[in-house]
Length: 435
Ligand SMILES: O=C(O)c1ccc(O)c(O)c1
Image (tube, rainbow, N blue to C red; front, side):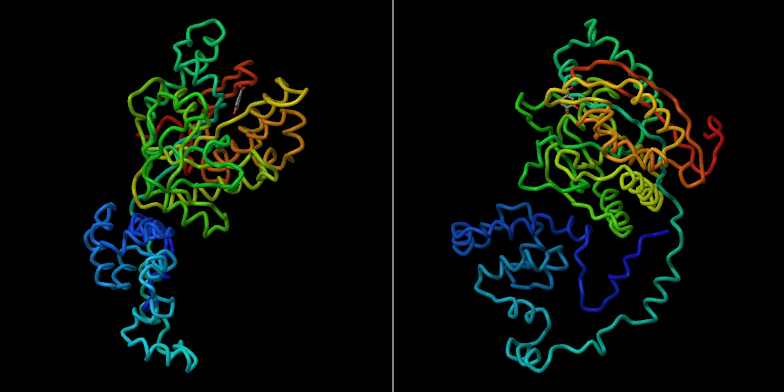
């Protein structure tokens, strides 16, 4: 099913969606720069020079220099951003809106005083709408979810790699547990990894606490968490697929926060290091997806599981033949605070791994309190694994999953390390028979 963008058919209207946002990113950010008196003064002193300092397309600069707001909208501008530019020129919202209608300022004002523009004659053409619905055939090609990787993301694992300690007796058993994984990953390299992790007060401090964050930008640098950024590459993303997923998930009632600029911390980089080793560049694209598990209330396992189910629908409605893996990271049992720090619960962790494979819907009903009591305060990170599990094809009866690898080890720093690889076989392909 192609995504419904029938809002594009409303006459005389540009809906600002992720597509427009990507197109107008720098234009809108330029507008934001006009929120200081100093910048407004330097813009007004030499508009062309100011615009030339921004990575804008010539059409975008032209639109502003010509005071043509319709052209600016076509070029991805959004009215609330452009209003900062308009205010700099001394324009009111009414003057800006009126300038897009082909009416004089006085005519537009008079129309508004007279009750505003009538909706009569300004609705969608029904024939056009019907034709759009009739033409919405399933895509000829589609993306598929090929597997899920679940792994802890303990920062000390990254530090052990960065400081060449992987052969030391303390660390060797941890890295031995990922030998098979690296081989499997080489043989099953996806085009894109949808990587579910939590930011650990690196990008999101207490000024902003979004529950679910989808990265819709093109690239993200590695965070400096206080020890200097890890010497690993930043990630390249797939903004087009990310925008598609944003559209699909939000339409499925998941109220995401979309972020174009942020840094990514150990929650994301350590799983990549574990699965790919030391590399100059990560061998595929990575879409970051952050879940708040730092400040309560945090999302429930059930909500995460449902989000995973919606994620698979989103991926499968994307009309390019991409292979997508979904990774769930964090956990397993660990507590980093208070007199109970160091808590490890092997039995609970292993039962979690069993149920993640065999009873994911039941596992998703586990309340937060069980995670905290049984797996330690930071064990709550495990709710993120349910997003990746929910994205597998067996959940809705259409396919199967195959466990390729399972590993459990205590300790890595304060934490029990858990790791699982599930291969996804959509539409009940028999494992091993696909080309
Ligand atoms: O065990 C640890 O040291 C540790 C520290 C920070 C984390 O985010 C984590 O998951 C584990």
